[in-house]
Length: 621
Image (tube, rainbow, N blue to C red; front, top):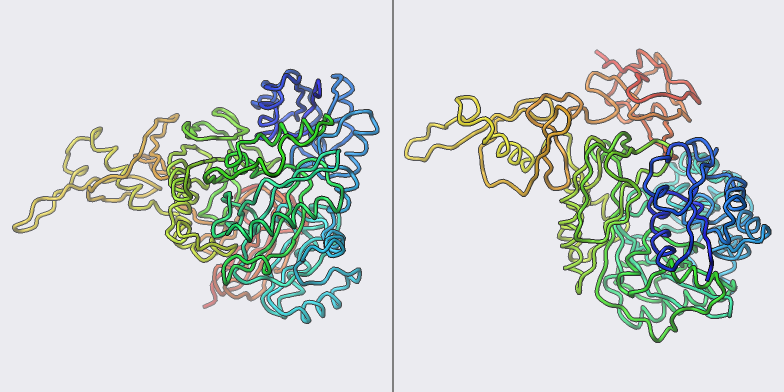
């Protein structure tokens, strides 16, 4: 077994690896940037080494920093986690050349699967079915446009070197192709340094199903069944589950056999995920499921596989990297129950899911389920890294039981002042169509109105705040207003000051809620949402980047990567004015109504802070 392990990553995955490595008696070493000096993963390791400033490009994305830290601490192996350098073949080779054990896929396999077009050609040669599309070398816009026309719309443009939902655009009509291509190429260049794309037929009613595979250095490969990752927003996974609902045993056997075949075709070693796209319009059928790509690393959603199989996948990785054979044979692996995972992010659903940064002054996560988190109360969500707060994982004997647990767990989350998607997750897990497994990758978009909260407090929030206020304020003439109705009992109403305005609430049965006093604010936490009440707060009334008077404000810190307007322009409602890049995501700022651009201060490549006036639109007379 490996004696000492340097973890070339941060946050929740670093803590996850530390837990298993420590249990196995392995000395653990973490590296950290200056922004992470107080993070939990730093103190939980046996040793920790600072590798540079906060920006990832000056710390976590520099291979030489990890190699120097490994030499300084006499580490025997390096585990890359996921993200950052986990699928970087050159880094894997450098680790091996330094005489260290690489706890990951072989460099040759990383290269084979790293470029989506080459990976598909390899899978075709191995007899694995792939999605129809174009994967050629001619990358001129005109040729790509013509190929998309041949495939037929809708199509999906995907960065050849992409991953994590970056560099992907769906195009529904021919006239929108070139704009989408340009945006996709910009994002691909910024994220991966490679603007090349491929084009796939966009599958209507698509399900995203992936199979966990493992290979060892003795020529063996197995699968640990499938996961369904269809609930996505902007190609980013939101809720994952295992097994996939509606998957019969024959289809499962065929799909998993294909996944193992794909792993063997590239002599795969370690943990990997074969991702498939399924046309679920007529249910899951083996002949309507196609290879999409392979992730040559551990996946963020691996805990649901651990829950249904009872296996520790990080332990598997460490044993295989130590030269051992696979811990289990295929026939000894079984599915036990159902598991679900929700990704709790620091983001605001009411403003288009823009990331939310700041201190975690108040943080309460459920304690009766598995929670994988990289932060703690008193910490901070910075603009430098992925804004994930935690993964909430539930397991039950049935899918309905796992979903019910997940909905309750998400509703119990308490975070302030950073905004989160907890309420959105709770509503999603309790949605009738979700519970009936009527899901595909368009689920969230179709149900957005029901799932995404508005900028005003909901009725349950007002009820909770009113009931919380009543004991404190008694029964004065303003706090409780009695209605005069002939032959009817009086009603009781409470004036609640919340979200910057006063609401008169008729008391009814309140939902489950908790309250907390944080600094000079009184908070109510209900159904995963957090609101300050009893004090006027104007910031809750802001619903987005554009104010009603036509002021276009920066919704968060970022860089202007495209400008589409100028002072004096006549614009239509919904017209694109500029594009802001923040946390590696593009945010389009649009005209709120027909009018004239009176002021335009946005400059290409400018770095801007949150709340900066970028444009002012004046309605035409």
